[in-house]
Length: 596
View 1 (cartoon, helix red, strand yellow):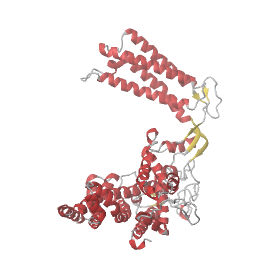
View 2 (cartoon, rainbow, N blue to C red):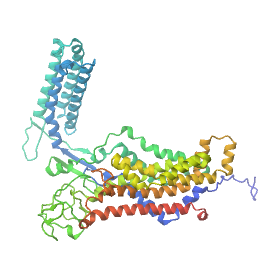
View 3 (spheres, rainbow, N blue to C red):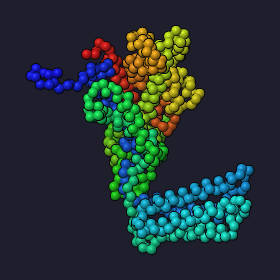
């Protein structure tokens, strides 16, 4: 082939037209309301997922010496070493009387010995982390004696158990075990006497005190569980989708539109699986409702930090401040207090129906804003002096999760049931349609309320009941789409070629019927959030102390404490509005009249 100039023409890359989903995405990108809704929802979900890094009493990073933790570990060395010696000398039969099951005394002996060994190693490691190499030599000697004692105890336990010797070992073995245990206890006594930390302002005795070295810790990161880590990675990948998806399409797929279409499922699979890779190596997860010791340690001097970085909102999820019950937002004029804790713009003590506000000096802990700083409690506090902003950030986890997971349940149920009814028709359609009508006879909210009352309030029960009672709308939509698509040429051709029915349903028909389902799903998320909030407001939602936006509204219903109802209510209103805007945008984008 040649061009008009006689030169050979360069073969051009094959150009493929846009499919329906490409046109839908193009329509969505043209709508400012959809873009704003997506950005704000991404921020809301990001704040909920990364709540430990935004609000909490655990430092993100701290470089310090922990004198209190060191002293506690040092104090426990001798009791634990004494317990190990006692177990080793007594042996398996001496530790537990003979049991009916063969081998049970030895098993219990090994478990007890292993537990004490683990405790001693943890305490020695906690001390060694803050000691120099020369000072930690005694601890290494202690651990070597521990290994020797454990080996001697395990060697003497088996023959003693077989012989039934109540003393726990034969004379020769018993002497070895006793000597190893005595050496372990002696080294523990030396560690208690010689490894005492030097105290500030006290002249140290070189033979009896040691200087603690600073160590760098990441408490907020160490408290992250594997589930939290997975969703943190997933959110980053979803947020960075425009960047890495464009790079993959350009450099790996060479801009071939057909290859890009075929790669969609593989991209979605990678998106779900990649965050799983670091999970086997992760060791973390602590109770988020446990109060962190760092703020109290920094205030008392037990923890001496050269640098510390707290989250932007340095208040724990369950951290209480007994001097700030029902404090208004600190940017508000009525929240100002003097040094004695008296309200500057109100009486010194106010008596209410359910509590008494007394004048008590406000305790400003480490890393917290000043007493009357506007950023101290920008959304006020609740009945226990807990920061409302912190609890709203963490409460978003429950409210947003309930909306998404319940929608996933109802969409899956609705798709399967509606696909079966629409594809097979006849008696199958008749039976399924009658079942759908039966479910629609019962008001979903009251049905959920009744079931939750009997099963007990919990996040899982709410999500399951939302999915099991609200799937009928999706089922009817999918059924209608299948009835419309059932007689089209591509379905008839698939059946004529002998394609399995399951493949025809879920590979050929279902993708073309997903438009109305996506619209219904976006509105269902908003409906799920509203339902969970209503249940929590009535006291049948999540159990305390877990917060959700609905449960925060129940802290106090008096209009005097307006901030408790206003801010969680505004958050619920904002989220539902954003999902409604997104649903309307998807509905308009799927309208064939809008496609160009």
